[in-house]
Image 1 (tube, rainbow, N blue to C red):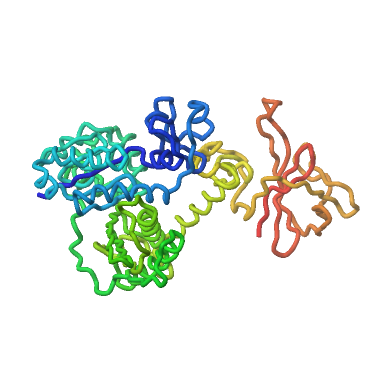
Image 2 (cartoon, rainbow, N blue to C red; image 1 turned 135 degrees about the horizontal axis):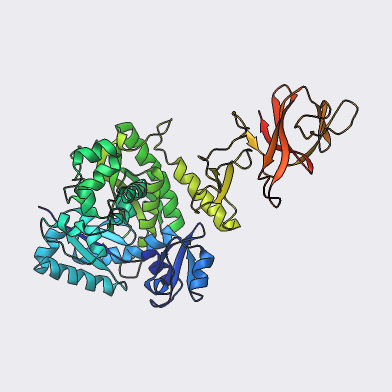
Length: 517
């Protein structure tokens, strides 16, 4: 039975940020994305900083904390010297993400005499690269990664017993091994009372498969310590490799990243044509002095073009800006991307025109960049909320915040505006005038009716003839509380062939709440 050794550098984004800022290891550091803390150093945690906190809350708890913006390029660039140091004494390194790598335990344990001796030697080797790490060894990949978080060497066949007492959240602690929906699965298991991995493992595979999704089946196999994702038996289709000759030789990161992005698109075009997707990728580079550099990246899910380009950029950045002993002595003359392991393309949702569906991830990255430039509240997401009018039924939350509605949408809302909803909701509620044929203002009576027939609607400098209407419908909310209660009405008015406006009436007059197209 093959064994897996995992080497984990805790809080790697914070470690990399501290190294770039030339801060000592004891200085508190927090890394943020979308105005939320996503990683922090041990010193920051002792001061109360936690993942998920807002940036200001983290600074309030620890005034000395150094706040850095999340930068995957920085994390990948600074992790390459660590991977190179480990690869120098234990060949066969595969990177799961910056801060976490794996390799087969059999060869290194034989070379150093035992698994414990190998773990001690690799920890010393990482220390020589200037970082602290923890080692985990187990029969299966997921168990080894979890064991690394606990600095444990799991006996052969003891994976299930080691995992049984751990919180079920450990199955989602490592994002490089779990699907995006793993967090939702963990929340569901907690609500069902399955709070430990052992309790989840006690379920039968049939019950898990019939009641949960595909990712739950994979998590259940990991919880039981069963073999998971063995090397793919699918034969690699021919001519999947993508090679690029660099003329002139590449010695700058920006040029390498540009070449890597183009190669990633070519690779995924070939993969899509062959009906497969890549789960392990070899990045190879040759230099003008005959040096050959290579590194394998392993992924929990099939790579998208964007994910491939990211890993190529991180790897080339690490090689070109690495330390003097690992940095190539000449420019890169040849780049090659080689799929080491592939799965059926059905494992990755394809886009309409044959792309691999990375549009959502690309859009989110763009929004995070905008948020970083303009501030945390510059990008907001609408959440369905409870209420009677269309404005009340939308709660705007900043990107990165928990998407919690202001009011419960499932609660009964008597008097709620009937369907269909307006195509556009006017949050600012611009003021308009509603007049009769003689130019007098139209109001509603105490009984909720128009006091005169509307004929003209004026919105700023423009006016339209009112050709029809529906309503008005009276609004009498929280009549028992004069501070927040109000009375009014809503009406739908038809102003041209293809446009209907939803108007709201209150003590200040008429306002536009929505537009039907």
